[in-house]
Length: 180
Image (cartoon, rainbow, N blue to C red; front, side, top):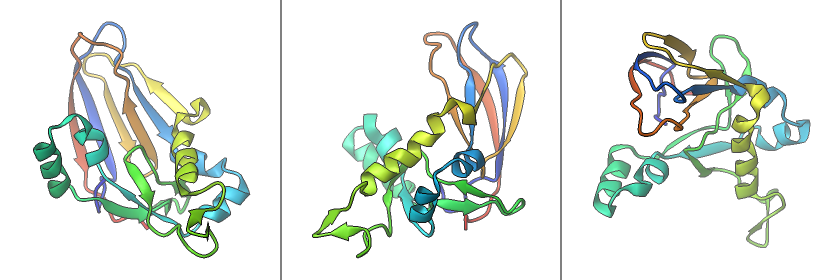
């Protein structure tokens, strides 16, 4: 995540494996829409911190991981973002989201411990919404296929089921705004 994440992206397939290598996109507007009202109320106004260090840096030696963290510091965004063009609310957490920035208030904490469901459990629940198949579309790549998506309202995942076959792509990102 970045302070001003891309508003969209274009991906073109140069070379793809015979089997596998699909990309999955998740509709985070629908993921938010389908949340129970109790959860929507709980996350309204919450902000979360995200960092690429914990995921991408996990396999790096300590000095490279520290450089990654310094080059890409954690960012803070709303948990529920409003789409700047449609006005729709959407769930704005992903696998790079590490924790809530403002969950620990007197309403949510008792004796220094999170109340049930707790911050970590709530974040895990929200992140898991991206794995619900009804919110997903899966795209099978062919050479010269092109996909364009709204990065503000979707998440994407490249399925890593093709090793040792090659998967070569070209990607362009479109400059975005600061989420609100």
